[in-house]
Amino acid sequence: MKTKLALLTLLLGVFLAVSCSKEEIYLDPEVPVYSSLREALEAIPQVDIIDGNTEGTRFVLFFEQDIDHRNPLAGSFNQQVSVFFRGFDRPTILVTEGYYWSGRFDVRGFGDYLQANIVRVEHRNYGESLNSDLGRWHYQTLEQCSGDLHCVYQALKNVFPCKWMSFGVSKSGETAVDYQYFYPGDMDLAVSFCAPFMTSLSDHRFGDYLFDVAGTPSDRELMVKGIRKFLEGGEQGFYTTVADDFENLSFSEYVFNVFDTFFSIFQSYDAYERDVFLTIAGIDYYMPVMLANTIEGNRDEVDRTYFIDAIREQGFPYLGYDRFADLLDGTSFSQDNVLRSFLRESEYWMLDSYDGAVRKEMARNYFSRSNRPLLLVYSQDDPWSAGQPDASSLSSSTKLIINPIGIHGADITKEKYFSEEIKDEILDFIHQYID
Image 1 (cartoon, rainbow, N blue to C red):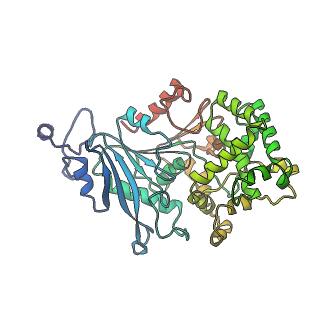
Image 2: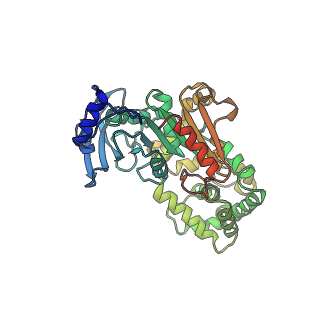
Image 3: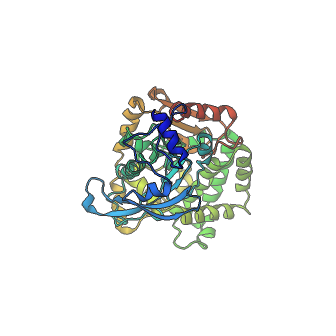
């Protein structure tokens, strides 16, 4: 009887909140019924629609969040959220942006395969989602950021009553797992690509992986030659050529960008492209161009909030600077000065306040004991893979996939980076929980 009632309602042109079963569609008396997504969103008190298309399938929202989820009296802020709508009877992917809303890591392939709604949540204190804690950073914590995601889910779960999956890549992948850690009952599945879980402010695993594991021995030999060229002469060497073009470029910031140039080559390019770039990096004519591009990219694209997040709780990679001690000893370079370069003087105190308790607890107990479904995907040559959990201690509900040809990304539609075998393995696991 209730099946006939639901079908009759659908024929009358009303979109229903439904059970999501392929065999049966029925009305849930506890879930509101909406005629459109706009109507559903307008019914949520925390939501202010700021943009939307005429078809009613894409909306950009401001979602009112508490700055401190433990104390609503601390004030609120507007967090940018976007929604891509496929149906009230479809699963939903919650993209847990660890940065500003950008779409830099493409979730559309998963949205297409699952025919899923996509909800993207900009990370607090990035882009349009700034709050009055900016500069003090008392509430820029893993727990508070996970609380933001929980509030968005709580507001939308009756709008999209089917299965939910959190999803992220890199820092956003960390955020997807953090959310499951703090709110294990929300998501049916968490999916994380290339997420580096660091357990110290200066995590040496990344330098070891970069110089001993990533790529081929030939790749790594070219990298070492390139780095030595960049660092030759210390503060009176190649640094002076580049510093003339960049205001306030300290030697420590310069060194960070030298290593980041090569780190990014392994992170962002396949084997053929990597060989081309590593060869170019050894040619004097191209060296300043490559380094200048890295410096400009870091200054223009990486928000200071990234470094705040790293210093507060998430940790930061140590990229093997000690392997070049013969070129760096006696200079002003230090890891502390690298991070200091991205802070204001009033924020230097944070360098002594790193708290890795959550990350250490996750490493010790969470990945081995959690019974919540979790998919972790890493790429063999991506140096961020140094931060993957210990494969020998993962719980039975966690699946770890190592992609031998991939890069630092999640676009499974590209066979160049994801073979059919790896793609099927990823989707088969997801379909167990999201269908």
